[in-house]
Image (cartoon, rainbow, N blue to C red; front, side):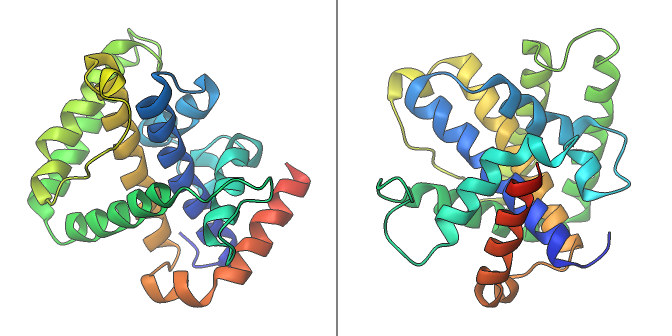
Amino acid sequence: MESSTKNRTIALAALFQCVEGVIQIANTGNVNEELYQTCINSILTRDNDSAESLYGSLANLKTGFRSMMYQLGSGQLTPDGKPKDMEATRYALRLLALENKLDRNQEIYRKVIEGVEKTQEKLKHFDINHENISLSLADIYAQTISELGPKIMVKGNQNFLSNPKNAAKIRALLLAGIRAALLWRQAGGSRWKLLWERGKLQRQADAFLGIS
């Protein structure tokens, strides 16, 4: 994967899009279907020749680009006057930290790969949005990433969070967030890059929104 601002922007937008999906489910019990499918497809696609190919197109990451720009901005309000969701930033940073731990634990990394390959085989029988797929990805997350600790504590409406189908989708999205965090690192991303390239990343995201 080429180390470039373009690829880092795509990866970070994908990460924030996964986080947005988690927040939607936690607070409403639902998630935008296209957003969810784009995130989940990045785990299961065999086409990983480029950062963009993992997500189908830049247009599929519009939510992520917008969320990323808002969260990286210096102000305390989004452009439409709403307070920033600091939970979104917290989840994103935790996923970046967990991916770093995963990179240093080859045994768990191997288990993730094996689990993903088994889930890819299930796509021969089930649609990507099928409950069996989300349950399979959720199980991978629970058996691997959760073991790296500390666990990400998702906040929201307990009625929605306690629903098994919602819980599975949240874990599947968190696994997709790990995939995006891996892409971020492969593209040269780091905590220092996140700190010093905020403006550059925002400008690139804005440019992508203009052409997607």
